[in-house]
Image 1: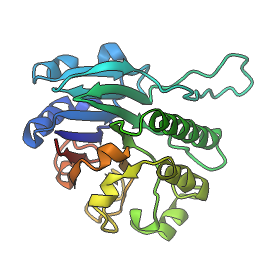
Image 2: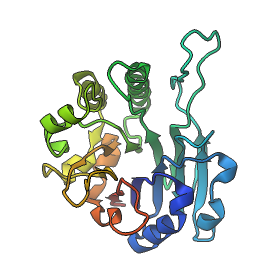
Image 3: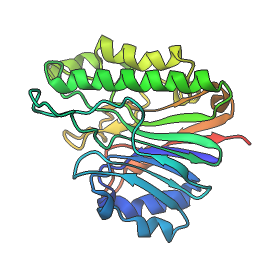
Length: 273
């Protein structure tokens, strides 16, 4: 079984490229982030014609997550229990709306989540507190899933918008200088990311691709890709039972090349039977 995660940065702009990736890589299940479309705008027909079932949640031109599967797609949910919402108006009396950032489904016996963690924007921005609350709520839910079933096959895949280690960015000092008040590298964010290990999960992409300065994202600006000024922010946390099945992980750097590429690349997991 081959599973992958990919922030495509607009599915309507890259649907054909995603199909080409699925065919070339022989991927069974793909978790997609940042689709940037509403449900009715998602180009589902392109993928069903290629043999994939489709689940998607998107409310606007922002965010949006999807799962494509050719080995079954059931028990779909469009948020996790306790998922925080966000609203710019902090004085509103209504609960903040839940954004399209999490999608869960069971595919081939694996409970798979496509996750687009909030960016945080800046440490002084309300979005930063929202990001930390979002990660904390997800970790609490993930811990409960494992407590309920230690043998559960769970994959938490996606764009985590956290740089867990200094070597996961081209130059951490340069990054901090370039982006005053920068998120992604702060101690609370890194602690929130590491808390998934405390809950019993294993970040399998690091286990199989431990080399420093191995990136999954390069900005479109400033010749970031040709000069390899990248970041590692796309990860795969797996429950113990699933982590033991991971035989290999590939970070498909070549998908950042060519016309119309996303600024992220796929992270591919091979699972033994």
